[in-house]
Image (cartoon, rainbow, N blue to C red; front, side, top):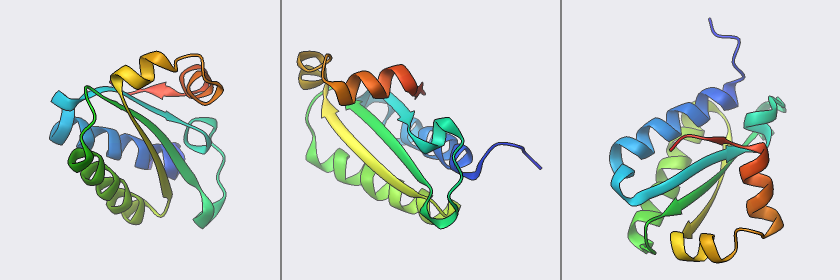
Length: 109
């Protein structure tokens, strides 16, 4: 049995499935928050994800959010998915939220 926290397993599972299904649309996928820190809060554990898409695509965004919900249910965690198109991500790279995600997070893409 793995020593990794359940939210880490969930983050790994989500990242693998997102890359497999939508990899050509994803510029960056960063997991941060509880999942990276290893904080285990039981059923209230969260996995925060910053997803940067090549371009704005509401359909892909909805599908990735649904995937996050499915993986979250499978692993008993709650996902918070933050999606930005690459141009907006680049223009706001100094925003505290983005800086924190990139500095504290783990990149999967």
